[in-house]
Amino acid sequence: MNRATENKIILIVRKTRLDELIARYNTRSQAQFYVEHLGADFSDYEREHRCYQEKVRAAEESLSRWGRVQVVDRSFLPNFLFGKEDTIVVLGQDGLVANTLKYLNHQPVLGVNPDPDRWDGVLLPFRVEDLALVIPDVFAERRKIRSITMAQARLANGQVLFAVNDLFIGPRSHTSLRYSIRHATREERQSSSGIIISTGLGSTGWLKSILAGAEGIARSWKRTDGKPPPDVGFDWEAEYLYFSVREPFPSKTSGAKIVFGKITPNAPLEIVSHTPDTGVIFSDGIENDFLHFPSGMEAVITVSQRAGRLVI
Image (cartoon, rainbow, N blue to C red):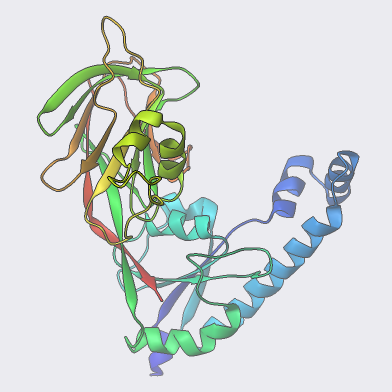
């Protein structure tokens, strides 16, 4: 039997902006009318769509020479069952790589940039043209793999949610979440707009914006020589996380002292909800894939034993 036929390759794709517009407005012409009515350039949507579809076809053709290829849309990721020996190829933006990694368990991931003129691609080191050379190396285990630390939220009822960039614990809408927070030897009741837990990979995103906007936190990063704080960010492989409390409200029943900290294997973050029905936990910006976090439920946030594996 040809060895290549035994290889299983999962190609992860996503809908383009044009696909989403057509789904919303039913036809291409109606989508065009909507875009142009607002003064935007519809031809840009068409160019992006055409380029992406061409790259999907080219990637599928190239990968089919090295194994059995299954194309999976991003919308199916939460319910898709990946095999232990699958090789994952992600064709899209950086966010699609992060969305994919959290549903995997040590399978190698190749990030492929479908449009380098449009996307920077921090997590997309390859182009479609590279696949013919890279895929054989991956199967022969000749490529370097970079490990990516993930965060984990485990509820008292056994439900678990993983995150590649960050976890959000907070209200479903623009209200406040009431909860008790425990970290290391400190504990207090709080009311805030939520808690962000950032990984190394996500440290230059949401965490950076929080630090930039919070004077008290920024002071804790200030250098002793009086110079401005260094650029925020830590290694993707770092075996720790950082948590930040957004807009804590001090009152007679809620404190604002535990607002920032480092989560390690020996110092997890524990949160107990005091909000009846609107509390949620979601990760990496995917709001429709969440854990319900009602009153009395405890969540323990730790560094996950599961790690992402990005081919470089």
